Length: 396
Image 1 (cartoon, rainbow, N blue to C red):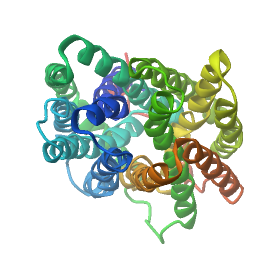
Image 2: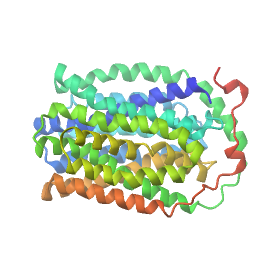
Image 3: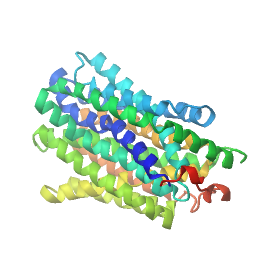
Image 4: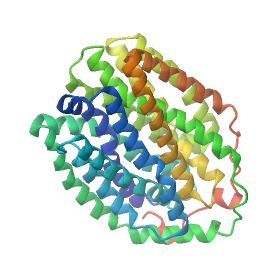
């Protein structure tokens, strides 16, 4: 496992996903600035999901069939620089434009980076993917804090300063492109001869489970801050801390889940986490004070902690199409979940935020129920499971 490359890929993931965490935090400020309804705020999240997630399979196919390593630094720059323009946008149309630029950058980065993390992982795919994924978790967790801090310091236009780290990290990621290219070539030499065969049916069910989980994840990010401000009457500046708890516990859980998945298996980790998630979210809605914060943190750990596990399971189903597999499970499923969030925005306008959050509990229960139909063991070819890195690509 090449830890240096994984660390830089994780740093890139952190940078890309700052906008994913920052967007929910900026929604109350955009509402005050432009007087948007809940529907139009949720529509921004939906648009972000479409551009950053549903488009990912296009880049995943490109990653599996073309030399697209340049998407790594380009995706980093566009993702964060695009979000940097959201706060400075003068109108709703330009807000949408910047959200789309950020989303396209994210769609470029995720499949290529997830595949790169797999090709430098050796015999520890889940551990390596958790290291890569935790960067994104940290980025999403830091996003609300950075956005709130910049807005408090410079006003809504302060988000434009994020273009500076976007440029710096893009240059750092560009430096590992040659090493990543050699790792891809070594991986393709081992598994490229494997027959692709028919489309694996379990991947469809796994995408459905992941999409439902993503709807809960996106729903919590979107509606919990609005619930805290408009129902619980907490100040909007507290939302950064609220979201940080949810996202930071998820980051820790994701990092811990990798080694546990390598040891105990993907099915077990997914079932246990999604089985407890509805209880944790219900506990948040039932409680208040410190208990509510703890319950929200547990919800984040259980929902977010399954991310790397589902991606590894998808790659096991599709060993010679890992770019597409990661795009389906990081991208498409997240985009489908984002569509669900958009629909829930209309529910919130009509029936209120409390009922909307209880609907998310129901969605989490359905996701857990579907895990029973997943195969116990992913049908991974032996050569794929026993894959290791050539000596010159291993960490020193």
